[in-house]
Structures are given as structure tokens and as C-alpha cells.
Image: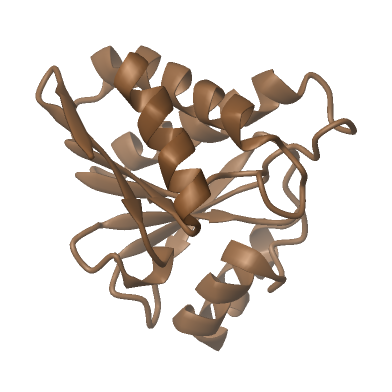
Length: 175
């Protein structure tokens, strides 16, 4: 499913974020130390190879809502933007911190003249953020950022499960 707003295409797809060959930057749902973990971070580290760890080691630690950028290494993408999403029920205010992830990632994309970016469902896995609420925060933030985007022309949400895809498509259709 996709939607065009002010010349920017927003898409929701089911898939693996590490296989988005037509996207310039993918977003890693990182941990504070930027080390390989499970879920999205584990998949990205596995696909990118050991060079990714070496490049971002000096960038850690990051705080919830922060984002940093590295090269893509063995990924088909030129860049990886690493965001630390909030742990639901722990990091407060979680909605603002999650919005900061999307905002900071898009600002880094603009700063680096990136034309396309793919996001996972940040904080919805091990960090426990309910997918319905996370999708609302994601779309509200992205839509508010659209007037500021000069270089980003495609924003893709890559959802791992069919359930998450349905939630994100439903949220995108009403905005």
C-alpha cells in the first residue's frame, strides 16, 4: 500500500528490512550501545557484517529518541540510521521519544541528501510498544515532517509480520 503526499511516496510493505535494494538508507531499531542484538538490530548487523560494529562503536551510547548514521557496509543500502526507541512503560514520555526517532532519522536523511528511507516498526518488538500506538506516532510524525523534506522522496515502512502490516496500512489509510 502506498500514498503520495506533496510529491513524497509513503509505503507499507511486508518484508525484511535488510533486503530493500531500492532504498538508500534503512533504519536500525538499535540498542543504546549500538551492539548486535535480536530482531531488527540482529538482522541488520548480520547482513552488514563486522565493519558496521567498528564504524559505530565510537558513536555509542545513544539515548532514547537519538539517531546516528553509518555506512551500509555489506547491505544493499548506502546508509544505516540507528535509532534508539523508547522502552514502553519505562522511558517517558514514550510517545515523544518515539516521535524523536522518526524526526531525527528524517533530519539525518535530509542532512546527508538521502532520497529514500525505510523504517521498521521501532520499539514494537522487545521494547514492548503496542503496534497500534507506535504506528500512530510514526505516521503523525512523518506527515508533520513532510513540508521540511527537500531530498527524501520515498519513505517505506517495512513490517515483519502480516499483523503489523495490517495495522500500519490501516493507520496510514486514515491519515
